[in-house]
Length: 115
Length: 114
Image (tube, rainbow over all chains, first blue to last red; front, side, top):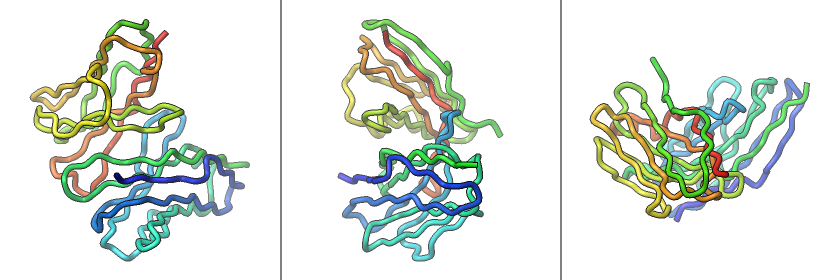
């Protein structure tokens, strides 16, 4: 079974600084998706960034970028120029591309942003 | 475009009772998935419905059930509530072919069992 591990339960960053959240996963599949979701106090899970495993280029969305290392099964999220609104729980998730399988989530990392 | 709507936002029930939660997906989304979120277990998949048929199920007891209507709205039901069922229940919808693999989530229903 696929598993997703986030080894940092909590992280903090100064406003305007850069922070990297770690995620590793375990799968025997070669074609899959990886995601980072953000869950603010409003509780809604918001998709931050998506990576397709067959694409070697790391995904980027404005201040958010990933470092996808397929061989190492590592998928870290870098947040640049951190803002107060970035404070939230961040979840790494995996989904196999075929077979209509569900998302598998890590336990999450709580990010605090210090003004 | 309206997002995924879950009702109610909060619910308090007594042990032994049953509860029904509702989820209205984004218009045009025919797949609806349910997840349970607790501090101890994190996010766990309950089930997925597509075109009124359950096509995937997580490892939860039979007390947890769901259904989907012809307009893609979904309900989940928990019977004989236990204290451990206290959780945030999240619903997510996606396009028929789950393009891009991702889902759009609602804000959840916070269920407290006392």
